[in-house]
Image (cartoon, rainbow, N blue to C red; front, side):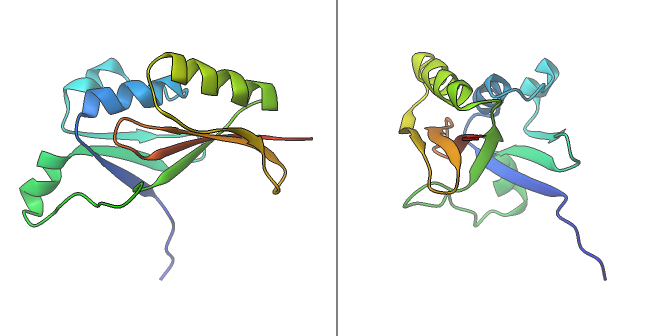
Length: 130
């Protein structure tokens, strides 16, 4: 049996608020999605990101509880240059999003920074150093 990664999902407290954040990172999610309790969006390359309200998850899994103790998932976004990482980090912070880790030159060869989405998940910004 062949298996392929097709989808990953975020459980969020406020779907429109979360979608607004990910739009700032370049995802062209239609405004009509703000009215939905479940949203799926295909990103270039074929993977799909989904957002579900906690109430939607509880509708089919009443025992579900939000995880505690740290971020739930990390999603990395590639920027065009190290300077673009710095600029986007500053832009998101200036818009009220929590800056978690200031940009640094990572040992794996990328300029890297971390901003938290509205639910505390890592939105990681990266660009090759070369």
